[in-house]
Length: 131
Image (cartoon, rainbow, N blue to C red; front, side, top):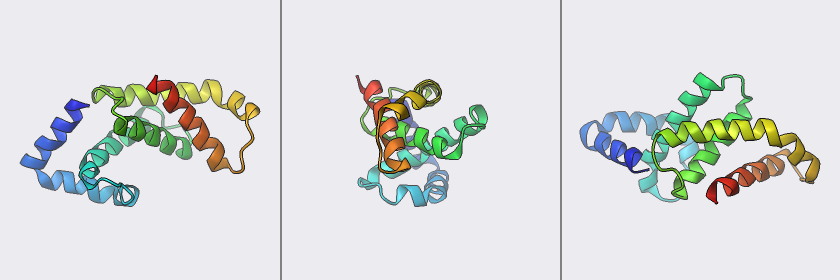
């Protein structure tokens, strides 16, 4: 994800205020980020995810928009995304995967809570992408 990293570094050097606006905007979801240096990159990534989801998948339930963003975040942190374009591509793949596989997944598992069930499904998607 060299292009995202370079773009954010350039923004930090050229226009730190824009980066800080994104960090502030997503402060609540970024507060648990373990590596502080990741925060500006994750803020930029989250912003791209939200823009893509609202533009291209606006009818997707909010919870699943959140799960799609979490999947992209995790794949970014695992260094599985190669460029900025992979963000939208991964979201689109996740939505297709959700539409085609979620019901079957639910039929095949037992989960204590909806969170456990949904997190397991996202993990299954991430495993598929990590191969």
